Length: 210
Image (cartoon, rainbow, N blue to C red; front, side, top):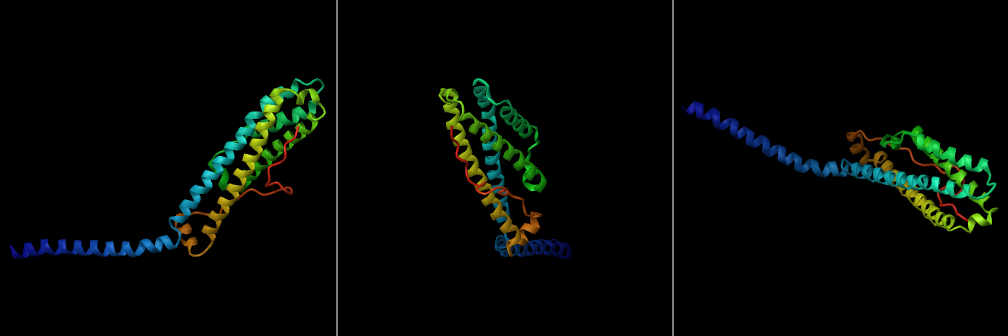
């Protein structure tokens, strides 16, 4: 009986000691994981995803305004057909793109997205410049309403892009800098691409005039 009891008691004591050492190790490990960015990189990652969602939202808002704008402009007699077609084609190209969360991890996809949106922005700018030649068009309430909406949308796009660029910059610094790079490596997190200003002042909202 004594031998059996001893065999029962010692394993139980060993389990208690093992649990104690595990608990002590966890207490020591937690600050180390925090210092190496193990959790910080996740916070930065979520910030990038949230910023990207806002970018998509604002670009979609602009895209949704295009059909109304085209219909309104079509009401003006002899409006430049090529200008309208450029807007319609640019919007179609944007709409044909398969945009999913993987875009923010793929430099090529992000570049294609940015270029397509840039083409739509340029086509819209051209259309608005041409509209200056049609006083009767500018006098309509529908056109004035679109003016306000487009101004607001371009401002929101500029803000969303800037916040995305800032979020990616902070995320990339966390991934690259020591000691947070250790935590990023443990998480398998890598640097992400970001928007590039292809023209001077591309990071600012364009001035929309009618």
